[in-house]
Length: 346
Image (cartoon, rainbow, N blue to C red; front, side, top):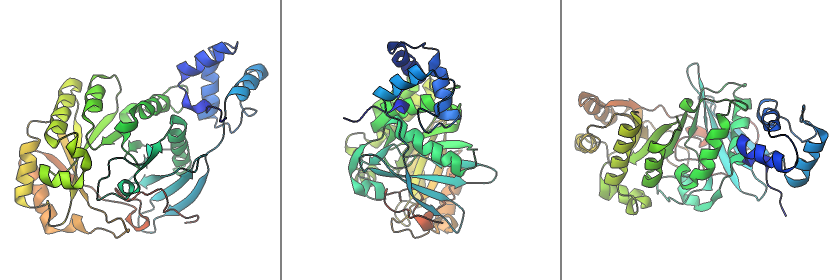
């Protein structure tokens, strides 16, 4: 029988566990400090914890490291892709993305994905399983090391649909931002969803400070249904209205992600349709070039059609940006993660 991982529990949950073992609940803060600030790699390495408590924790809980079994570095832009293997053989990828004076970590929330978006390598894998908080935080720890100990933002935009594993992702967010642990600000975390309406509404009413990104993909419902099977359950109009509700309830901006398919959804008429769809919503739009899953590097940001699309959006008062995709040469850009592509070495 596999013991539960100690890193799957929030500090308050750890306090209850330690209390049930006869220890002082206040000891949970020191355990958190050892796990996340001091990066202890075993129970024995936990300093400031009584031998009795450590022994009881070790008897009932596991504390194993998750190996990085592959690493690739882009020769074009320095993006780093990491491949993780978990105890049951499940694999996922994370990405460290360097920018101008800042570094971001892109984390996965599931092994595989149930959404089945036809343009996405992860969607082609099918759904394997949800990731636990320990497995999500393990990715963060490895990305933090790769970034030299400083990360400026975290995005849940890797493998999987975060809102279909919301309980574990939410717990991970709480643990990442715990001031006795990594103390990473929630305001610097973004969660991206294809549009799981009930969770968008739940987030709108929560006290989490994270940012929301919604993958519109394309503004034509028929076209979106061909690309995104989840459209059948959560139609585009409902997704957009949930985003509108989020903005009003939180008095916050939402990010809309629109994938540019060359010659398919980048005409002036497509831009006008998108403008009508999101009218009145406090948002920022990121135009994302479609990245072929075989690793070709898109040249769409330089295309005349995309530039014109952006100009029409801006003219309508919508803050619209062309995302500079990174890591495409190592299949680390949006839609390219497959949990199997990284190899050891740079």
